[in-house]
Image 1 (spheres, rainbow, N blue to C red):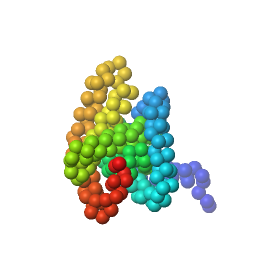
Image 2 (cartoon, one colour):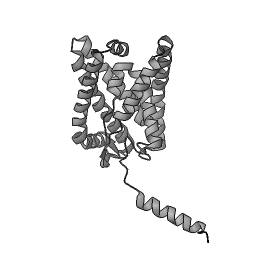
Image 3 (tube, rainbow, N blue to C red):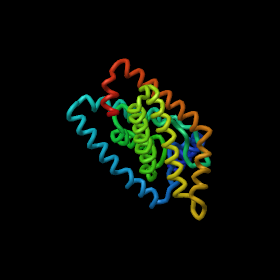
Image 4 (cartoon, rainbow, N blue to C red):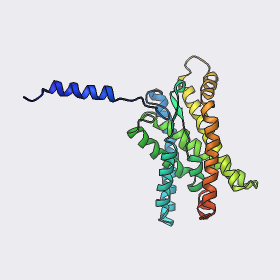
Length: 242
């Protein structure tokens, strides 16, 4: 005698319920932002993605091996940003980003594209961040994180700072600016009738215990990676941070 369909459904339901494990949602979670705010950050991110795609195409036409190199950097951003430390009160979590390092090596606009790919894959397959909040996550990590880290590196080098120290500062600032912008994005959408800046400070303070040390660690990671590359293929860094 074959089991009925209802028994099959019951078995499947029991497996799902007993086998479920808590998820540590990364980035800004699904449903945190209302539709207007989510749409606004998509619009804000699009010009940078367009710029990045054009830059990748242009540089790949000149040097076809750039496609392989940027694919490796995309994998690095994906892996580095997959290390979550939950921050429950903020509806998101802390994690290193890797966009400061990537901006040094391939430039900030291509890094925004790499971040968008990493964040999309994480949202679709790892439940890290939401699909509707993808624009906000791209803007904070891929745009603010990449361009702030790149700017710090370039300015530091132009005033005579050692390349390794400049890389450390780029990784540090990129990480902290990512979370400052994430805090602003969340507070601007969630403050309601209350004070925007009070909400902003509340969220920033929630990030501080995890993000201060993580920013320092990301600076050290960036410094180590740049040192490794400088001793082997220094022209890569010159090609990125130009």
